[in-house]
Image 1 (tube, chains in turn brown, orange):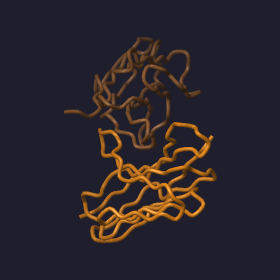
Image 2 (cartoon, rainbow over the protein chains, first blue to last red):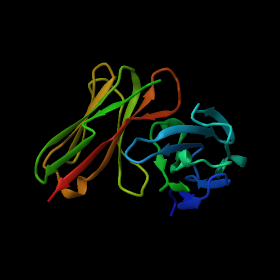
Image 3 (cartoon, chains in turn blue, yellow):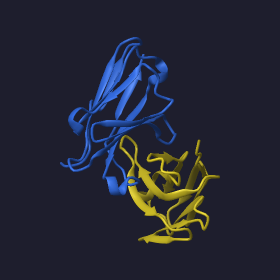
Image 4 (cartoon, rainbow over the protein chains, first blue to last red):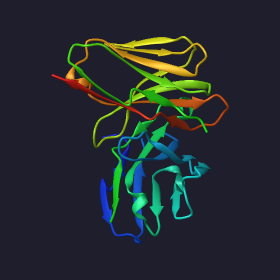
Length: 114
Length: 112
């Protein structure tokens, strides 16, 4: 399977705990995006990388959120001191530089904060 | 902030009927994409439109980009149960902002 993969698919945690999600993009894609989606809504942009450089972060991304993409390959999204409002589907997508509107999404990581 | 409003938010119709979903904004987009998302999965790209007034057809689906590149529509002919899903429009800014902004979504249910 050469699509975008995300891990874990589901995570249930208690408020205050830290969680980390991993995304492996399509290998030849140098752009990687993180989005958050709540039930019944469209995805909201969080951040994106071009290779290893993080080029933009949404104001939605508080100080508790951090994303990395070491070596321009896989990416991690960490949420520290989780809150119930962080419960959502976290979607990762990748694209080519020349087709930046055409995103290929993973199946998402669903976070539930109790 | 660029907002993409989709209408209707929910649509439930009988198999075989036709339908149109709308995507509107006050902002100009350099390109606009339509995605379909099924429960528990990520969105899947259906089409990209780039030129104002452009019309693209994908089997029973017809996509149109507004002349001013601020709005778009998706028309489905003779809907089938397999068309059920969340339809999302998404726009790429005309000002070099390289992130895709998604619409509010239209949840379509086709009743057999």
